[in-house]
Each structure stands twice: as C-alpha cells, then as structure tokens.
Length: 193
Length: 157
Picture 1 (cartoon, helix red, strand yellow):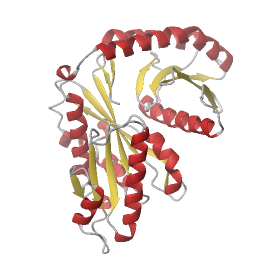
Picture 2 (spheres, rainbow over the protein chains, first blue to last red; picture 1 turned 120 degrees about the horizontal axis):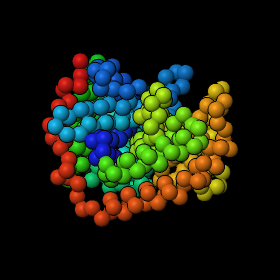
Picture 3 (cartoon, rainbow over the protein chains, first blue to last red; picture 1 turned 60 degrees about the vertical axis):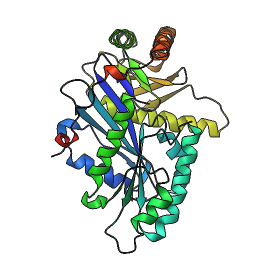
C-alpha cells in the first residue's frame, strides 16, 4: 500500500524481491545498494544467518527526488527463499506495491521456482491481492551458468501473466538495473491510476 | 492507499510531540504494519535512521504477532524490547498501526510511557479514523501527483 504525505511531499512504495532460495534476491538489491549514490540511499539492513542466507529479510530504502514535485521512496525487501521460512515470507508481502520474481535459470532449480511461485500466489491470495492488478516483473537469473533452461521454458512456466521479464547475471549486475527500473515504472504507473 | 494532508500531518506530529514530551521519550514514531513511517515526534536529538527503524519494527511486530497466533492468542497488543540503556515500547493501534516510544531508561520508564500513551490513545485513534474516512471519500488523487519526470538514471554512479 503506497503511503503519500502531501505535507512533506513524499511517496513511499514497497517492492518485494521474491524467489527460491539462492536465486539471487539479496544479490540484486545489494548490487543496487552498492551502485546508488550515497545521497539517494538509506541504510541497508540484512537479517541473515552466519552463512549469509537470508533469515527474515533484507531492506534497502532508496530515495528519488523529483524536482517538480514529490520525493519518492522505494523500500526494497527480499524474502527468505528457503522452504522453511514460509511464514516469514508471508509477513514481508504485507502491504506490497510491486513484486520482482527472481527465478534461478538452472534446470535442477526449476521445481524450486515453480514451488516458490505457488507459495507466492497463495500468500497474495491470503492478503486479497489480485496478481492481475499487481505490478510484477520476472527475472531469469544466473544466465552465465552452463546448465540453464532456455528463456522460453522459464517464460512459459513462470510468466503466465505475460509481464515484462529480463535475463540476468546478478553477480555482475547484468539485468539488475533493467529489472529495478521496470518494477518502479509499473508501481508509479499504478499510482497514477 | 494511505495519504496524509498537510493539516493532518501537522496534527499527528503535534500529538506525537506532546506524547513524546510528557512521556520523556527520546522519540515517538507512528508506523504502519507494512513498515512505512507515517509520522514522528519533533525530536531533533534522535539521530538513528527512522526509515530503517520503521521497517525493522514492523518486521519485529509481525513476527511476534505470528508467534502469538501460533500460541493460540488472537491478537498481540504490545511489546517491549530493552537494550542496556534504552527501552523500546511498541503498541498496536487499531490493528493497523504501530506506535513506538524509544526512551532512555535513566530518564523515563515503561510505567510512565504506558500511562502517557493511554492518555493519548483515544485522540490518536480518532485522528487516524478521521484520516481513513477522508481517504474513503476521496475519489482520486492521481491528478495531484507529479511523478512522471522521475529519472532513475541519475540515481546511479
């Protein structure tokens, strides 16, 4: 749910990076965080285990000042991808304004992609969020690895709503910015409606 | 969508600032359950990142709420976290918002904070409900927004 303050001229939106464990959600927002100008970002919070697996969520606030009008603040969250954290994932989706689904392109992880997508659909349903109305972008990550599925297969199985999708190698920043720009564009467009 | 008009923003800020002063807190924050900071008291001495604080508080409350549901309790009402020097008291408002008081334990204490929150609770709920009903009556805010000129390229180094 976006929050607009007409006194301070601020718009706040929540974007969640969703996907199976180790698909690169944290890598995506870490890359954004590392490459954004210091004046446009707040503190990055990572609630992770000792082995750097996300335990609850990562959080990055990003501010965009618009000379003519409002300051827009995007709150980027990631979910913990591992199956056991189902309850935590649901909590993070509360009040979401846009979702980036980060899929792992590797063949052996495709079942995990499908399971996580089902899990996301269940959680959205519980919050009464209609996926057809929700800003949504798909990212097929790890395109540099050898055992990957063709994009057509990933698109057919995951992107059932024909939303914008991108190939990515998040560790090198490839496709990260494109994905981020697309989701913010959709979120702002929905705000205008 | 939650929106705040300038006069509402001022009322909220004033109320939270009064509560902050009376409860001798360092700061009082009003957060929504999805983690957005709605308003805060005028507390220039508070130097931590309030945006990040709001996000973590909402996560903390959401996790505790889920825990209490697991235990069979329907609702979580309030929680208290203590550090060596500070107390952080969080109370749910109308099931949708979280009011947080951060206080220095050598200056105030949980009892004072709770009594003062009790005093302001109804005023705050009334104000939030007024805002909600104003939002419901409004048809569209689209024409008041000017977000088309945003250039994300300028964000990156």
